Image (tube, rainbow, N blue to C red; front, side, top):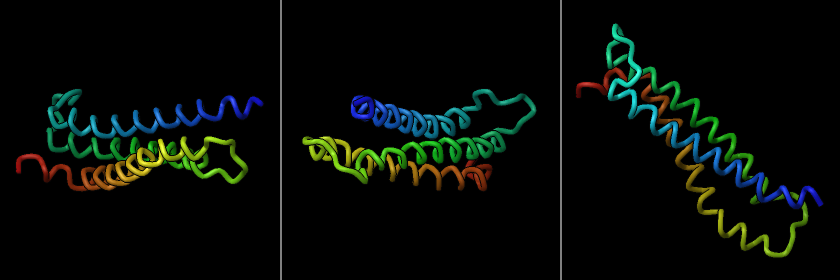
Length: 121
């Protein structure tokens, strides 16, 4: 009984956490590009490059939460009536979040390695 009542709420929590992580991953390089929180003696190029590591971390965290959502959309046990409606409602969002998380992981890695070269182009 308790598993059934917490099932949708746990999935929603993981969904919100994954969306939050992706939003942080998108916001970090934007904030770094404008030099927010940049130390005085740090060049903007290096500061932006360092933001790539945070983008990668937040993207991987989002991917972990998204992977945990997978168990809700593809359970290995019997499900209640109406599950198909729930799955249809969230499958596109799940796929979109997965693709964005993968893209942001790749983008974060590129910024982390070559971000200093992007500033001043």
